[in-house]
Image 1: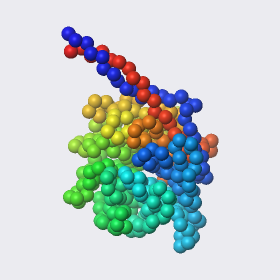
Image 2: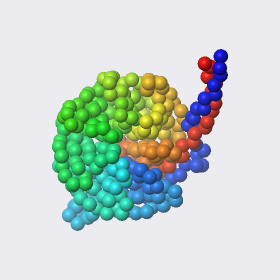
Image 3: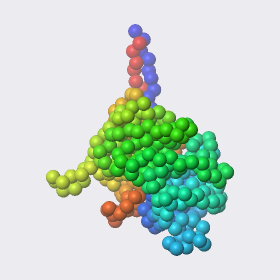
Length: 355
């Protein structure tokens, strides 16, 4: 019998002193993206502004100020809460979507405004570029998904199917995207070229956030307090953690903390979820994505409205606010509106394997 030593890399909790807070937004941060080269972060807020940050120094590089309601004709920028943003995989274009039905396209390097996409009939709640292209998918509270070609400033098509507002959208390299349908309690996979969709059920409340882990698996969170892992080949979750962030409320009247954001380190077994229970939770998916084991939690006060892993997995960024990104159900006064940059530390351990 031979004994082999296998190196296993495990994520470990960072020292709280290593976590950096970037402040600059007056109101709750609602969404963020990290540039593909990991040098910059763009964040947006209920104050209608967009800030470009340098990761290394934590300094503001540029700010696109929000405008007052009614100044749409002369103000370059958003005049309503920004709910979502996306950056193309080559780092060229930034897209932002707001409560006022607008999508704005920016040159990411200079923050120069390029153009507006109009067509949605309600708030734009989800945006994602298809990897390796300038195709943009958008989702809205009008229950539709739209496809745009940003390089050509062109509208392509609209897809319908959800029975309630769409709360989130994501896509990777394939010509398909995934959406969370709020109170219709469905996750959908849209096959764009075939104009068909797959429908998945498994949450007991509003599904508020969704992210792809790889082309075959995704993670979602909702106000039922659950985090679910899905396979595109199965109509029910392959894994589900109820009360993922615990319970709130008085004895006998407890309700789960809502899961307000999820993120996945692409093509790995690491996912993260955020709520307003003062912690960002990191999870490890089991073999074949069955089962979710908690790794550790990171203390963060406020509503974790957005989570993103850097491409290399060196850090995780949490966009935090005093309020939930989609409403004003609660307010955490002690929370700081800002970005938390959480370093991800890996520890190598050796495991003996017999053969």
